[in-house]
Image (cartoon, rainbow, N blue to C red; front, side, top):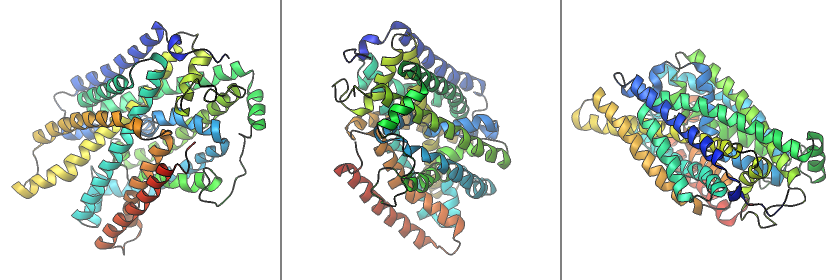
Length: 475
């Protein structure tokens, strides 16, 4: 490769065509389900798909909810910079997801809840329910702002387009199709977008191996560079990655995603039966593990490709967040259409995460805040027509709000990956363990649950924010 090439010169009209075609298909899926269900678009249909979705499609949709652009862009950078210890996260998937599916999920089905926090009121009281619902809203708004920024950064790098405009495109497209088609549009778009992501990652890996020479050469260069490591079993909590941080820490991170996250819960209850929901969980564990292995291999290939000419040190990029878009342009920029497919994949990941979160935010706000407040005032629940209108209005509101927050995400720091998962830890962790306390510890009372939530939120926030400010774990 040469160090003089620029990414913006390589983006061809065919790349724009591929990217625009992807956006058009995404929008059309939303319009299709909006028109198909226009006469029966109740709040239940809008928020949960009416409980009629097939478990295999839902499994990919659940995976898509957390397979954000951060996953595609940032995990290869982790492996590029720090090596293969990160791949031990695979083990956590096969513990955390079945744990959530077999111990937490049946509780939601038994109580027939739309929101996870309805369970917390039944188990504790309204104060705990409200506190946890607010915590979820905070977590989702913060995380989605970072998710939205990541593909915008990639698009801006390979096209020269303003990051602000790229954020606006992603935010508006996702808000529109979620607003139009509800949960069915979200799940089927997730399915389509997962196919785009899988194809793109395979092409990134194959063409990268071809450019380096062979997979054995990739492995040899990675060994010589100290990137192949599987024997770090240190208990030092300050280590960036070790067997324990990836397995134990990964278990808790995935528990946050799959046990108490409203985005996932709505997809659990979008299938017909509890047995189908459990099948979805197992399939999601397998496919997520395969995707993780794939992006880790891409990180090794990128390291081998740039082994003698690090683009950051050469000034081709100003921060490592830009590495993977550059890698794509370097290896397939001459094959018109493929860079456009990569941008479509990064947008796919972001749109999947954002769309599911818009559904979840709407459901939580309606179920945990608006309807209880209305019931206190009128001594009656909202009628179905009002719930259906509010579901869509809230989707529109949160779509605009997250798009606005995405503009601020570029000021969060150098490495989006740490920030994104710090958000899951310091906000989602206390929420998840409140649910776990309720399910497994019958002696925990209302006050104990509330004090535990508040104190754990304070401690985890202090740790996470401190790590970001002082850059303990940053590149």
